[in-house]
Image (cartoon, rainbow over all chains, first blue to last red; front, side):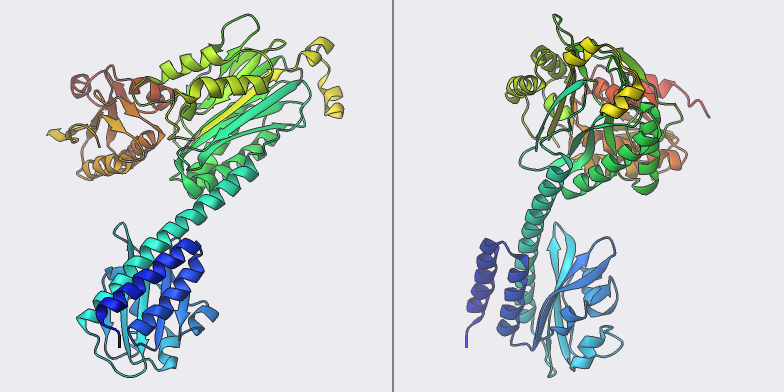
Length: 414
Length: 117
């Protein structure tokens, strides 16, 4: 019979092997099997904490497959597993009865003794690993140590794997929301870039869409935070803003509606957003900024300059002060450059320094070329810790030559 | 956090909290917790001293916004003392200077009574 050291090695080897497989389910399945064998128990199960609901959900089981089949959910603090999660410590139950166990599956199975340990990540409980025996058993402190060791390994692995899943999901979400090809919109030429920060996709986004009025709405935004959560909030904000833009062509009104929606439904979220409404004749832009760095405007034959946009408060912040709209003229070949702070912000310099450097790099011309020139100029300047979104809009000279068609005509064309 | 640890001092019910040299995703949670712990001690006014803060990203702004929300709900006023810090510009771009009182320095904030009180 293997000694304790062998059992420890056994647990460690399985998690290392499974980690390289990058499959959370395979890892957990292998882990519960190995733990059950090592502790000579009849059942083993892993439950993971489902945060929004504060419930433990069966994730893998050996000898106790009913838990998976029936989608067992244990409320935090209740029953055996719930108690371990609430305490954050191992719990031994030498004699199972109705007062200590709420899960009917454990009772029906005839389990007599239980030992469980928490899965901890950064001091927070993320799940529970427990083993059970059909015969009464007095678990030893060595048993507790071995189970906790397995739980610790499982926690590290689950967290690493969750992060991988999160990153993949976030990247997929970003890709679906930031299509590489921008829409073809009459009177404008468009180009954009998105670069995730330090390999971690965040909540930056851009969007351009035409409206039934003939206006074109261009948006750039930056949701605070990184990872899947920021990307999910970004997705919601993007679609909410689109809906509000259909109802109102006043960019300040659109942003205030968005802010109200966020404050009510996601009070912990915060974002900076710039909303630009380009007129049907493409000769005017009305801008409203919710705490977002002002865009740059480059006119032919002139150095790019900061567009004068009133800085109103971030999305998600309550303020009695109404949001403002700033209007700027768009002449043929003028380029409007919208960006997020990741492009201009670095630790040892003022943000104005970065904006000035960006202004020097923005030139009127083909938007694709302008994007490439800006990314080249700024890539050595910033550290790429934060993600970067860049949207370049040029008033199409072809349309400018046509003059100013009526909005009604434009609607049919576009 | 880099630099000296943040410090809290009190003058009556006016608390002054010195914020770290840099505020970003790595310490914004601590900054927010620090401000919230001061707010729980029932101050009338809190001045967050950013005079020597040279960098504050959107996570830092978020920490200040959350603390401001909590302060308001408890009837306290959160003020920012910014001085010549480059953070000034960041607060301005975020529009925070329109929703929170911003002072030149801690002294000016301490000498200014609350408008509502």
